[in-house]
Length: 628
Image 1: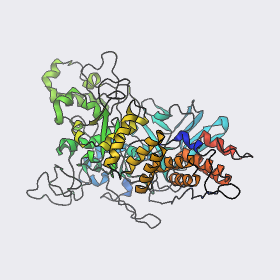
Image 2 (image 1 turned 90 degrees about the horizontal axis):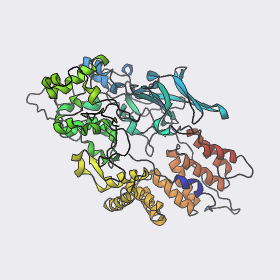
Image 3 (image 1 turned 90 degrees about the vertical axis):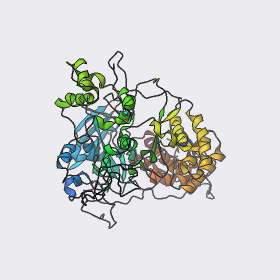
Image 4 (image 1 turned 120 degrees about the horizontal axis):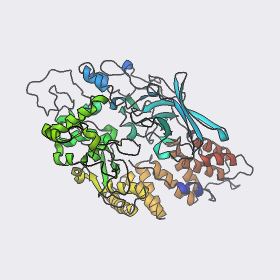
């Protein structure tokens, strides 16, 4: 939902040569230091890592038949969050479906690391690091070592992410902050490798935050991170591994408890604010959802939530996508945008949902066709049965007469019309071409491509959501494209941001974004005012605090800059540039020991950060050099 805005290139230089306010008679600034860490360890049934991070998620043997966890409190006496029921709650009445679904990719999309362990090791030639994944004393670990400089370390792995069909990654915790491993297992190639975005990294990227957007499509019963953070949790980040029945059918409060009511309408609902316009099949007054009986937009939303990415996604004010419930309107949580046009310049992976929308089958069938037309979410056909299974889906529309005349000797429709195409190995993208092209194998083989070209207009997806898009949406969408260096995006972002701020003057996200634009344009007075307004509305806005700190440092107000940076660094200690900025500030103020502690804090979360390692060595010298 947008990347972090930060003047990374200015952070280290912003504090060099400035005069700090509040200096002593000797000219040395005395800066206040807030605690580097305010982590409170919380234990929850299921075990802990050695840094106190709770690692237990609900499993079949830890739940009662109704799916409720046995424990109601954490070990420090605090009331635990309400545990949502998992798929086990459905097993009593739907035993066969539960059994078949338990073996699907979705049901096994995440879990405890020990339950999805793939051991192995590999040498990354670019960084010169050897990685190893292994189990020792009932704990799962990833170690890293660069023998050339005697540099090594390890992280305890808590959760796995990915069913293993295409690949698998793992999550680890540092003082309650959750991160992705820098390495992935690539099932199709049968080997380990660097995570896609860091294939060329020369340093170990150990500070990749595990964000809610990713976990939302791999786990169930997600818990919100601690306020002001993106990836710090007081307990398990999700209550159930994989995608549970409730993610598509709703929590089903009351389902199975009441006898059918005479005259109950198929559109009845007991929770109008959650399941508005829910045309479900339940006749017992419960809130269970049958996706196939929902209006098309609500039906499709359940699949879109995880099987569509778009070019840009804009989160709606006060909403989190993991709060979405089946039967609701997805556009109330997020708005999707695509670059318009059909002249792609390079091959990129399409989300399954977008690819299907481009197919002639979908365009001619309209709302009648959806993911469930071909896929049974409760079961997956065996490999030997796939060709016949999907052929049956095709013939449901095209008929046996067509099949008799159309290559009757080639029963596998998907092999010709939905071949596996080269694609980037990233989350929620496809290998199977869901465009269902008539002549897909005509040379050259078509790639999975993004719709549109850089600089093209943004359009909403799906088209019916066009009337819901706001000035705010376009402002933040173009701001994201500007960060990706898309042509003309910076100008459009500024245009929409200035208009959006006049429409929503109390929106901290917009104020901080426009402040960033003004700061880039050297309108520092305007930028400072916008950041101050944003922080008055949302004191935990880390982007605004970080970038306002840069302005204050450049103006010589080092004490104010340090106050802003320290708050942001406590909440996001993995953002190395902020910690380095603090180290430089305290070094410049003559407080070498404090500066050293900040560098050490940086290296706790990002141990291979070259500038951090260099500055730590400089701080040992006499006289001290306050630069890496």
